[in-house]
Image 1 (cartoon, rainbow, N blue to C red):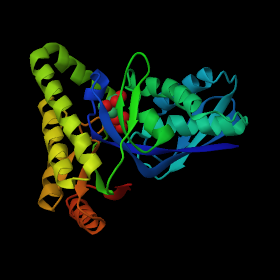
Image 2 (tube, rainbow, N blue to C red):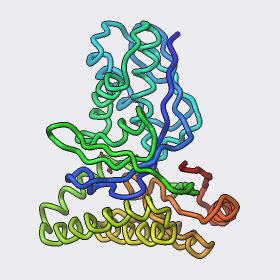
Image 3 (cartoon, helix red, strand yellow):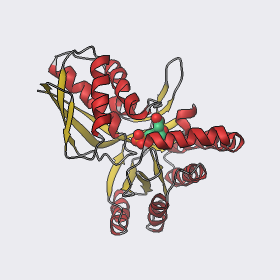
Image 4 (spheres, rainbow, N blue to C red):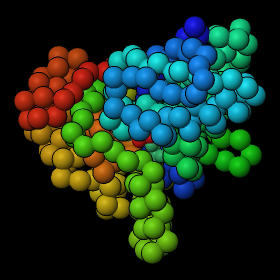
Length: 297
Ligand code: PMV
């Protein structure tokens, strides 16, 4: 039985804008998807997590085809990365599956090969993924990522101090494909407004990168709030997302925003230190939003 794992991620800045060519900034989460594979008569996913079995089976088939493996597998998914949407769980599943298959057949794949095969799986989940999620699941770290026809542009961001984050679930699973489609419609139907939001985001990202390098957490928090407003203007924030942001800020967070697809899914909030992060977690849990602490180093 081959086994593999991969981490989830949060997007600190730039979800959706990244699909349209802007740079986004993402950090890996210290939570993982773990996958084990066993040869079987058909492809199937076996897990206690909430997944869409048909999508998972399509991803398994796409990855097997990309890796030129002419067999079928039962794929067991476990680990502590929730599949709520927003935390890159489909990409973590894809990367962990490629690693498990590499283990099963002793392929010793390089990270670049793992990332490439995993992207084939991501496409069956997301249609037109930017590639940021599978990159983060493969390599981890804190990175700025810009998609490009001639090879994605990826830059590690040196961090001057730890970032103490709270990750909260709205209670509504995010449908990333539907959200990416709704942004595409907005960009087509309201092209002037979208261009303005896109340009505002580009300006924000540049400054946010500087704030991260300097470890200016107050400024980082303010940029997170500003990013949430831009996402809200495109219609990506539902009431539960806004309630998390409001609750976190009231509880002392320096900033709070949607992370990932939005329309539910998850939000992240920035705390000044670990103690504060646990206090914010408690407020959000109490408000009905299951939350966990994660640190970016
Ligand atoms: O919801 P998640 O964790 O799959 O994140 C999606 C991030 C998007 O920017 C919305 C889509 C993409 O492909 O980059």
